[in-house]
Amino acid sequence: MSADFSCLSDDLSALARRGEVRRYRKGTLLIQEGDQGETLFIILSGRLRSFSEGENEREITYGVYGPGEYLGEMSLDGGRRSANVITLEASTCVVVTRQTLEAFIAERPQFAFELLAKVIRRARVATLSARQLALNDAYGRLKLLLEALAEPARADGSRVVHERLTHRDMSNRLGCSREMVSRLMKDLERGGYLHSDGGQLVLTRALPARW
Image (tube, rainbow, N blue to C red; front, side):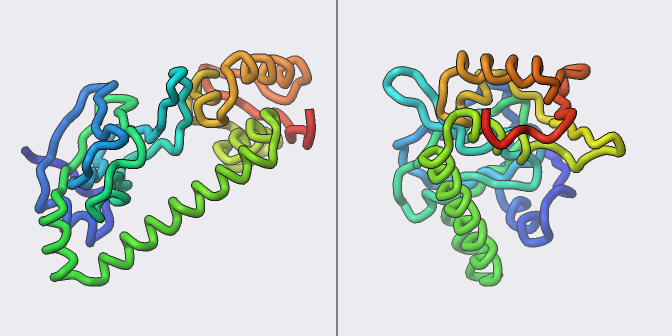
């Protein structure tokens, strides 16, 4: 099956050419938390969401990933999967087995440093997320999320969030209820801090430090 590897780095492209290209429909569960992990998923197109789900069906989103990124490296030590991964839209991935990755690293040992750097970056993100959950209230976490997703300011000072997020999506990332997110967003809109424009969120001015 032919595929476009142009979104990948040279080393990642070389690895991807040794894997199997697979196409998935929206809503396909690629990785289930707790399963034994032996594969790496390299994303060529689409978006994948990494998350965990509690007993009460509440979810927490760890991240959303797109072309050029990969998932599954955390369990290549033979351990169990630490999170679920689902497709947010029709996606194309290259599936690489642990054996293929080990052979590739033996030929290109510098790629081991790329894997290590990826694990370290994600560990730092996880630490920051835990810190935000512990030290910020719901509004503080919402403010950090919106500011992180917003593009640099335009000439009029406004900033656009291009990623289309529902209030449920936000609540899953923030670890609070959808109702709380809806109330805060409505209050910010009434205060003139943000509005929706063609489905995209526009931050019209700097969000207040507290709410």
